[in-house]
Image (tube, rainbow, N blue to C red; front, side, top):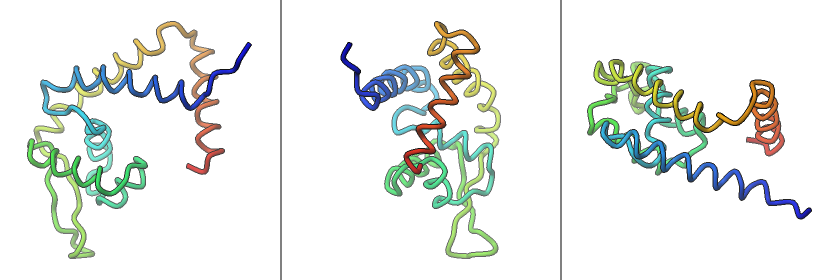
Length: 140
């Protein structure tokens, strides 16, 4: 049996997931570019700066800048000058974002449930362990 390229399968799953999530999140102004990932990270780490956000999510700086700009324009976050470093801006969720968090988490949980519906809990644990192992092995 010919082995399929793992990267190709992961990429196909990722594209399919993004299409599904974009459709569900579009009514909230959060479609495309992984904006939900940026928003959730800012919600869980209020005061994070753009550089740290870029590093944590492993996006390039331009993608992060576009996502932050969009989240600010749609009223989900605000940028505040960092008191320790006046050249740096800290990112904070707005009340709108905090109110949206339970809905966002519900959408993400539902999405994960659909994605893994054919796996037993043991298989899911094993899959997660393997994906983390691959991620660590690639130096990411």
